Length: 549
Image: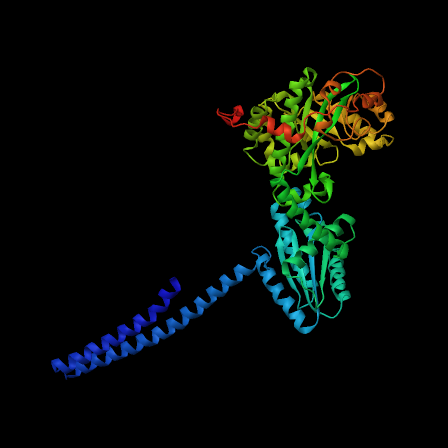
């Protein structure tokens, strides 16, 4: 609108000049002003009109040029990343579609390289965001200086970049570009007077002239290959047929998982935790399984990653929480010995970041009738460290009377400076990797340190992945007496657990005798029956954490 007003200004000036000249001519004709003064005035009016027209023309040229520059600037900003000046994500897909069509017409090979910086988070966290921004600019300049003139470089987001290699005659030419980029990254980067070595992992997707993939398909495939390269620490990896089948399978899982939630195909299994010293059942960990209509029973490792990426993890987490609390409440009714047994439920990252999650926990406890002190919510070490702001949510949950545990402890990034902030946590679960090889001096030292730290902080320690009697004896020597693992029992469905035999204390010296005593013979209630038994409409105000009003 402003540009339109500017374009009207020359016309106004020119019209004003013409009107002035016309006025004086009328005055000459009607008022018979023929003397020298009148002629001078009429000439001056004409000159003013002409000058106005000339000024108007110049102003129009100026405003038109600057309006075009403004439009061009807006178009550039819409297509380019403001930090690095490279093409942005939207422009990448548009340019890539054009490149795909061109490759088909010219019968050439197209390459898409997806880059992710390997140590960016470390530098960004340790040196600050300004250093991180400087590093991204340097990487952008280095990429533009490395690729060929006709190639396209874009910033995909964060520390991710995409290079589109065009007009190539062979697949080897694409790999040559990837190798050249890796070579350019061997040169250290100067940041704030210090030299930093930054590496990258590259995923490569190659499109031949007869390829039917579109721009988003190629970027997705290159991204998948990048994760393969990062995991293998190989520098670069090419998207292949095996990965193509994996991508197709992932899309199938994603589609079927939506139906699984709608059709109640997800079920909860329970793995027991044994207090070996007291020779009794300490608790359970609730673990989700997928009873797929064609694939059979699927473990969490095959679908929870997809659930996290697609935002379905919160729904699955709520389902497991409700089923587990309802099942534990049913056992409480069926056996007095079950009333002290803990029920552990894993918290997903999406749930920890949801400020309303404490309300959900309070709601589920009231709905199921399970005492809060029997519920233990487990959070992985990395999730809690990456989201320290979520500690307020955990404190709200703790005020409900619910216990909190850190799962897979020892495998993450926490340190003593973080642990002291976990004052609401009551249990540390030592990861299976340390239990597997306690002959290693390092692993033994870690377990001893965890136990000593837990005692100092008044925390309970649970050992995961116990599979032999020898491990039981060593863990008891360390002072760890609560354990879970296949030695005692694999995760089982709720209906296979008989409260009459599972919840009473056991005699015997070795854990294997506990395992034999836990062999289920009498079925209980199915998870579906448990859930339906407790489903009812609440007609009163649900419990709220005190700190949240």
